[in-house]
Length: 273
Image 1 (cartoon, helix red, strand yellow):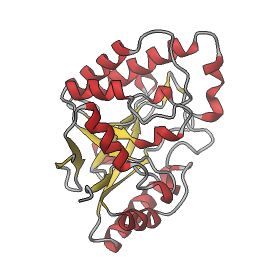
Image 2 (tube, one colour):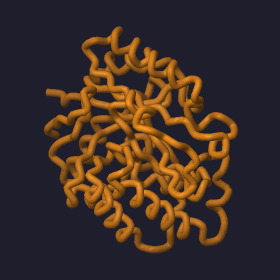
Image 3 (cartoon, one colour):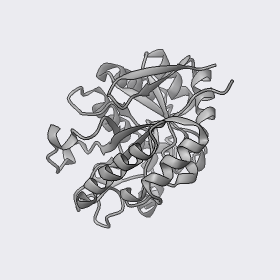
Image 4 (cartoon, helix red, strand yellow):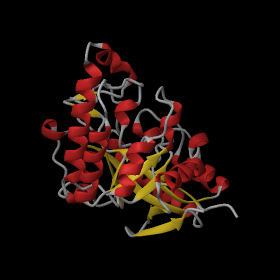
């Protein structure tokens, strides 16, 4: 019997670097047998961080995004659709004032680190810095410092910490053993009461490996950190990509259930068989 499929990380045309209508993703998800789909567009950044307007939703488009999700929910009553958002942790460089009223529409909030000291380190257009001597050593260290700050701080609004080892995206790795970074990340997520996600998109970047790496996923499991699964789709064809492979990776790491956020803000679990 096939396991139930869920995807708790999905984008569309509204994020600036995705394609396709919300409705197209919902239809593709339903056709693939997905039962829970979370739309998690990138929360607006200021021009200082997104000067070319392609890393996040434009503020004027946020109401359109919310309306499109509601329309998809009405059109697909058998599919549980979650209204969510992916939020960048900017640390001391934060230049936005975000209130609880601003976040009220979003039942699911993903926390992500895409910026290291105001530099979009995973943006292909800005990757030159990785080539500098010693850069991977410094970038990995700083990335995990920021990630742990975000994950451990219970005052942050995140429910799930996304693609935990995004620093590996371009396959630049540090010269040192990363195990201590992994242990610190697991401790931080546990301390902050966060979920993490198994993000299947990593297999299609230069790192050729899902986020997080198997050793990091095992560390999260040992720390008792719940894990969900998302494809991070930016086009409708990828809405169900490798979900079952993600389940298998979770099982191999020691997990026996997938944690599923719900449209009401609760959680449920699916047994991995």
